[in-house]
Image (tube, rainbow, N blue to C red):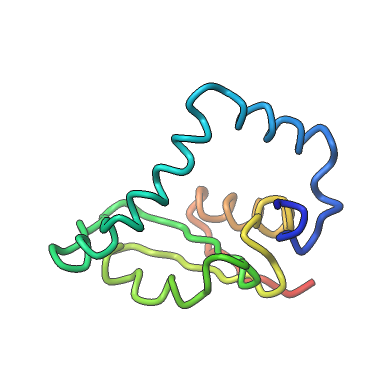
Length: 125
């Protein structure tokens, strides 16, 4: 699934995929991973919309791959209403797996963010 959804499958060597498999095989791991989605689908998102999401005041960097097959870019729209200090960077041509698909760009963005420098925009591959 990871390789099929990636825009840069070469960035997923066998040993990395094996680490993902081993982590998923840990007792309770798959249940924990899936429970987030179960809660969301069982009303978590609707409840947040109805009752209001909490305001996040922590400085936040969101890096979003525009080619995510499951989560459309539109799901990020309006995030600034809930995060008071948001830096949002879109990565055209990059999948959900931003750190693996575009590691140099993502690392630069994180380094700039953590050092207080302006976070650069992504230049497409």
